[in-house]
Image 1 (cartoon, rainbow, N blue to C red):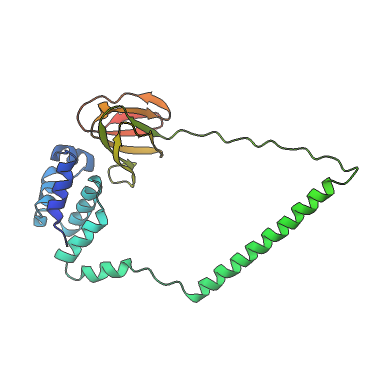
Image 2 (cartoon, rainbow, N blue to C red):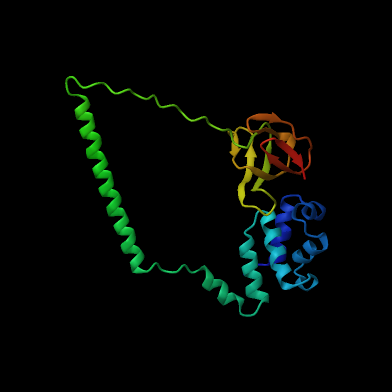
Length: 230
């Protein structure tokens, strides 16, 4: 068991985020965010809103949103603790599925063996006198597409969080970029990015150098065509 409100407050203060920034990023009103940190859940519209807001706010702060929802259920929702634990226990695969998997493996191995015999026979035939040489194909390396976002610390250190699509998307990167370390490439089609100190970073979008001004934490949206502030 842990204190939901205190851990949210500590995560927000550790990142230097105020309620106004968090409200813009999460689309949750500041008074509701404050209520979550103070564990005044009765101030929120309904229990469904509490769980949704709790998950979104925790994941925005780089925390495990499901863990906070489970803790809320176990402490404030009667009968939810057992249901939550039961959902986390994976069901055992029935023996029939194991037999099917074994059969698939056997068939795959047999196919590989037949293909190997065919290749060896063709190779031997091509080496016989009078046989026409077969044209050879030259393998070409596929073009490497640069990562959507590449960052490198020029000085000091900067904490950076990147999520897929929005503030509630899956985390693509969450860590501290330090001077002297190599460049960090983050792939995706659309990235929600929070940067604590943009002036410390060299930033590229699809391999092209871009400038993100500012000496305070910024939230930006990065796409293949560039970036824009949020």
